[in-house]
Image (tube, rainbow, N blue to C red):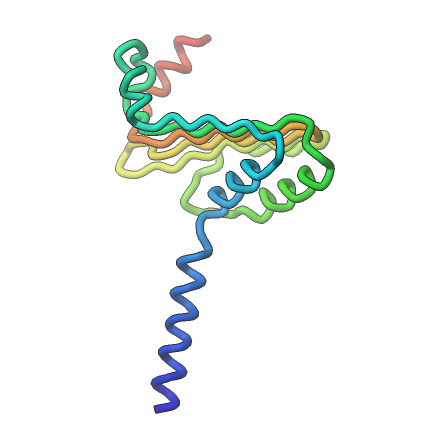
Length: 151
């Protein structure tokens, strides 16, 4: 009986830590949103559906989340710097990683079945932080065409 109780408790503990652990990028996003002067813009599928007829570049995008905070405190900068350093999610491919002169930049991408599922652009400077998160099913060829047309 004690063994069964111990195994059940251990299983519940494992499930609860897995359930509440979340994605480090979700917690980073929540940390930025809690900064007092943070600006948040969330474009859901309904809003994007209204934009798509006028912009072919939006094809395949399901949602966009934009967070930005200016004039952040030194404590917020240090906390976010530590948080991004500890964020090692293997489900994302790092396209750009730069740490120069108190500026941290990351561009991450998650792919599944040949489609881009998510793109994250993160920038942290001494006095400003920005995070752009794009979700959907984006054709990589479409992204290449957008990049080529902007040159």
